[in-house]
Length: 152
Ligand SMILES: [Zn+2]
Ligand SMILES: [Zn+2]
Image (spheres, rainbow, N blue to C red):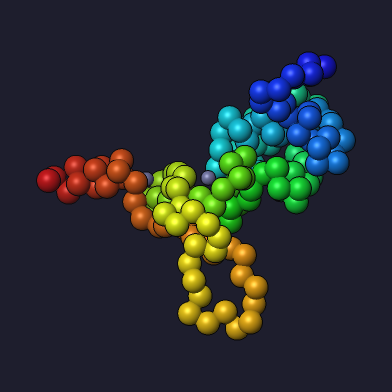
């Protein structure tokens, strides 16, 4: 049983109910796993959840991720050429930096702050509500290890 929280932070069970979702052990474990390890892949989350609650099928974990993303309790980031990652930081328009070498992903606040933060040269009449920005490059560790390898 999750105790009822008066004020302060809303617990995950309350969050699920507010979004019209049934509270299940799988969904709670998935939410917890994503908040502890943001930007994890579905595979990573599956491993964490299984280690925690044991008897849960891979499909159940994937289903939970799907519905939590649909209800916008989680955000799914789909970088080109790599598996989707999940995070629970959903209330803002932040972006991501990804290292091409080690795949490490970190948050970067949106410099503009509102959506869409990039104006399309021609919107073709679309009502645009988001510009998805991913910055690709190399993280400091990978940059310095290449420098070391190059002997400089
Ligand atoms: Zn790296
Ligand atoms: Zn993020």
